[in-house]
Length: 145
Image (cartoon, rainbow, N blue to C red; front, side, top):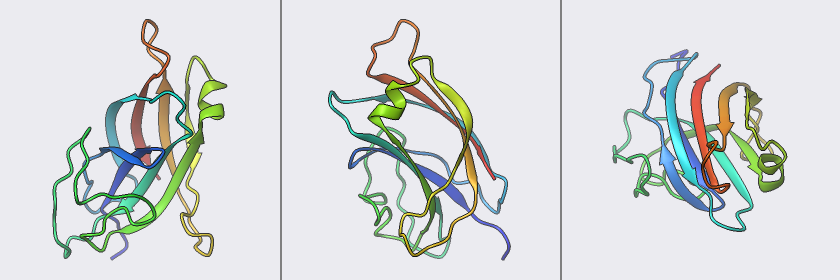
């Protein structure tokens, strides 16, 4: 059809902690959603998966901040639907810690499966609140292209 119905799932290590809304029929998606992550002590990574929602599949709502049957651990992020994983951005604990003031940039999507090719980027802003706990991270999922 020449377009996607993208949404993002945010995971800390193996736990799904957030899901964006789906933007229907878009190749240049704008989410503009801010998510506050409470990072557990000793976490290893934060991953953002971009998926293409299958409108013909079974719909199960997944609210931000909660885990839903619609979203499970990678690579099977949506076992109750036939949603395609477009790509992922994986940030290690070391990468996040290296930028104590945060970062705002376009990050290239990487394939979830090594035999797949992926194109696209997501624009993220990451920051630790000025007076916040060092394990709280605010992530602003801005847009994709």
